[in-house]
Image (cartoon, rainbow, N blue to C red; front, side):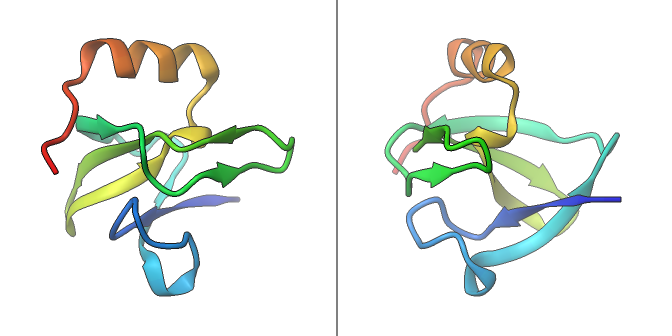
Length: 86
């Protein structure tokens, strides 16, 4: 079983110091907005993105790296979600 880490900030390096919580397969997340200029994340397939999605989690407003969404879902999310105010 694998979990995805959520971050406190999309602008800080994505490491253990910025790791806020974990989510598991089938966890329901509510996206509120996105930023396109966060820290660039590279996944295990060497794909990159600097898009981050702010989500509501029981621990507060946290950030999911856009690279963890399927490309078609990321495109849809950035089409329907507002840009987060800085």
